[in-house]
Length: 266
Image 1 (cartoon, one colour):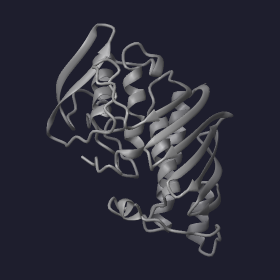
Image 2 (cartoon, rainbow, N blue to C red):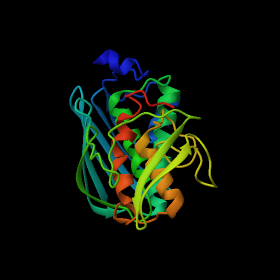
Image 3 (cartoon, one colour):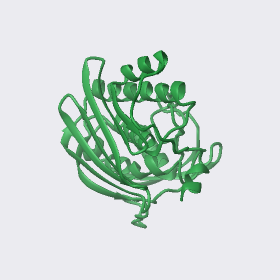
Image 4 (cartoon, helix red, strand yellow):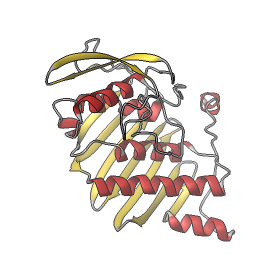
């Protein structure tokens, strides 16, 4: 299984405890409020754009990780299982504002810069788990309600409505049928992967908004394309409760975390 992760250049490394012996490392660690770092734990707290954020990721076994992420007293807990590719999320029915989501993405940037500058880009699975989940949370639609739910990447309803195709890789500059349902019915639109139909809708099919830079590899998958196209057509803003595209966003959750490991790198 370790060779499986090496194949995507996620290198496991161990730092027993945070010990500042280098001024640059100390400065970068301070920027992300790092309190504990080793192969099995990554913990800290910081203020980003006037938002108080704390994060804890720890491993209960080699392929199982628990994450708690709190921003302005809004807590999201998640358990990520890389063995069976499942995610248990409990968002305690919170709603993140656009500013809070922006602060989470900024936190991800700071953590990624710390890893790049102090560890030569080597990233542990605890760090990868935090960064991939942070991008997913930070890219959620407006007014998204984080309820308690379980995500299984092997799930496939085999119906066009609320289709969940597990993790299906797609390649840039190829064409796929983006399938989704909305208030007008079921749809299947032919879309070029990586295209940009309008502003803020570039890199169609990438798990993440538009083509903005992110600091770990992003997955390119069918479920992410379904949501991108649904959102593009409907200007969706209702999150998971949106009558048009909420279910498509839910179905893309596993693609964000496990898509890169599956090799869906465009």
